Length: 122
Figure (cartoon, rainbow, N blue to C red):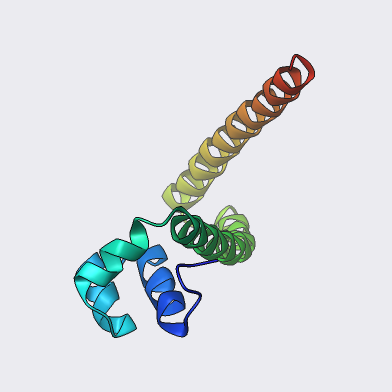
């Protein structure tokens, strides 16, 4: 857990994980900047900050995935637009995005396979 596990440590960890500078995070947590630096020197506290940051990023990815569904519907509608240049733009965007997603999926699958291989070889 974070530092002493106090509520001010939790506020500090959340502020730092959210991208606040140390001085601003310390102020939000009601502590001196020097105290905030001492907390950051603690490995458990740094782990807590990373855990909070990972949770924030996970929530953000979920929200973006939800937007992706809406964006996909918008692209689909634009493919049926009356304007040729709008349809062309939507078609290009769709193809480019599909190619990028395919490439990223391929990389992710390869990475998982490499990680499994590394674990098996330990």
